[in-house]
Length: 81
Image: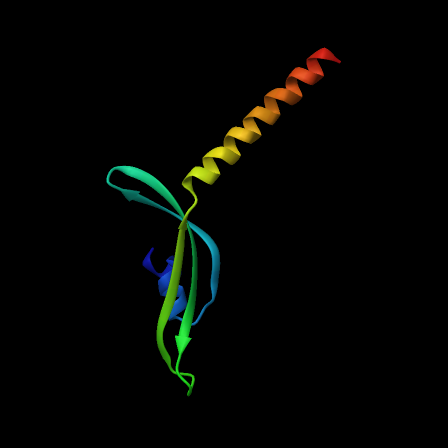
């Protein structure tokens, strides 16, 4: 739903940190870590939002690989003991 997206939440006044959003870019899935904050003027009126996104696709893939490798290593060690 649109209202769940970090920029929409920021425009509603919420500070959003570390929300991961999966998007499709040219047919490939890309995982983005998203931070967003409202921008107010000196009178406290909402004037917009700032949004920062970082591609964490490769980092998550490597973390998954490491967990799988550690799990296999643990199983191997249990089999030897």
